[in-house]
Image (cartoon, rainbow, N blue to C red):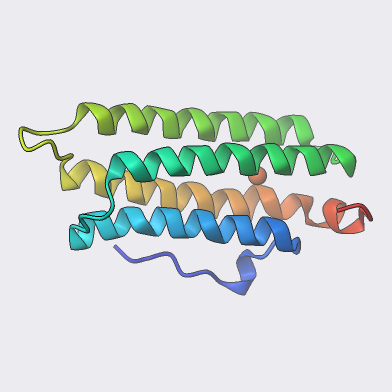
Length: 142
Ligand SMILES: [Fe+2]
């Protein structure tokens, strides 16, 4: 298991979205710290709540811009966002339910969550967000 390292190849060419994607990477990497280093300053419940909040705001921002630039795959992109949001909410429930007698969620569940989130974000950026690159970059009011 390794931390996500931001690469230039992840850039969608829009400074604001790149910055937000980097924040998402940081939030997901915090999940890694929880599993690996038992970082007591971070709790999975807190991290997942932050991630959900940030993801929802980021997705709405992307959708708004895609609407303005007339992105032809907007409906499909919105559906993918909705599915991703649903999946993270399901993980949140799993985290809430998995607390053991010490009030801690097992490493196994958190590792699974970290790996899921890592693929979830990177695949979404590389496969879906990349498709809007030209549309957003050709739109002057971005
Ligand atoms: Fe997206």
